[in-house]
Image (cartoon, rainbow, N blue to C red):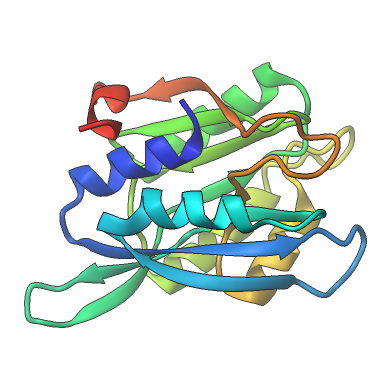
Length: 199
């Protein structure tokens, strides 16, 4: 399973989610500039829009999913919420899973999914949070890094994401060293994700 399929299953189980955000970005190492063009897409158009963006990528470009989603309130209005996303820095799967267990338990999430990104790991936590709670969550991620020793969380990613106002994780594999999109390694929860993703 790839991340797009997990997100399809996630929005399918949360009928209040009306739209998500994707972006095409260019990764510039060590840069403070976030070079990306964002696109809001309805839940019904996620797969179609993702495939179209994939087909249009130029060399050096990738597609990312944003934490920020549009949620209906039931009163004809919509509000912005965030799906908690995590970019681990550690290549150690055991450390990433231990940190994921802590975060999922703290969020009291019903489900979550861990993906191997090629060099480290990406975590999607199946819950929704308002902006203020998301900011605290991002700060919490930094506290997972030990005072000494290798970092578990990519602190530069956290900084970029706080500056931009949303989390973002790569869905495509269009630039070296990536040879394939992130792949599912572990699920938390009992929902049959693969079945719902293709329903």
